[in-house]
Image (cartoon, rainbow, N blue to C red; front, side, top):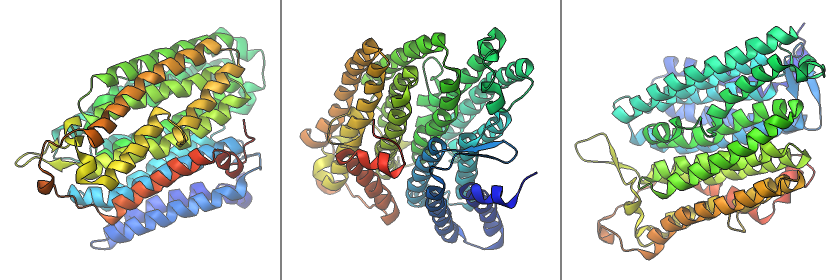
Length: 478
């Protein structure tokens, strides 16, 4: 039986759920309600972040053992909330520019956020599946939100078809796990040591992990990412590459750590190397900055799986730190791309997404070029930015698990990424602009600029003082 106390323990989730529904009511009740809905969405996410910190250091299993509250789940949840907060702030000016300023956009974001939080807090495989489907359906809609743009429609359709196909893997995995254990409750499943060595259970768990590897973008389940990120609204692409990835990692990581099968460890190591290699090498050939960031996102999935393959106490902390650093630097880069985008005259396609456009950006707009430089340095793993410490903690976890070879390979492959990030920086500061400086007009909205500033602050703050993250989220410093 569900008690009132249980409802109070999931207050952040309830805030997001009721806010998503209330936004739909506002949209149909008030004319020109977009500004009100935007403000309400910000307040809801801020309230969810603030209330989340009340539950740290409280290990609880509630709602008839369907949900689990722990420091790890709360940390991943707050990182997702921060990502969505920055996304909402940046979205206002973007959807106004694209003439799709509809209230249901914010409702879709909050429903997706609700699904992600359900996945993170789930202590039952069925709850994970419900949260996953809620998140995925919202993602399909958001990817095709620019309805008059062919690329946006194509990205949504491709994401939907491949996502539905991978859902089959997850469902079949759940069926096998339930068939061998007789339960979908994770606490009961992992309390039986004999079940963990059963080959049917291992196959079911593998199928479940494969489905989430698709969401994370791990090789060879990554092929949807470049096309979807390129076609989706740019702010949505940034959200997909951060919040969506974090939700999948935060959901599957406790399962992987609980199973802890040696064969999985080897597979994860190989997957990490293949993902880093593919993402970084293919990114070298890109001339479209959205596709470059998409392949960079694939490479980042490889870095995350270096931590996953480590399977030790340092891995969880390293992955959590990398994800918050990744949220600020990746989302910030996408927001700048979104602000610089313009439509070609007479068409619905974009110009200003080619790398050549970024030549001379430092002269045309030094502030935006400086912010972009910060994000690119952080993505490349150059100190003192947060991305450096993110990679350091992941590679440190690999060394501590006696996988020195994996750490060495990861470091060497990350050097490839330094090249294509620095190439953009060289274009911005040391190349001549293709257009005269006087002809380039920049008009940035307050909300887009504010979102970028928040991302910059996070990138620098957690880079200068990485221990701030571990003290803030109740982790012990690695």
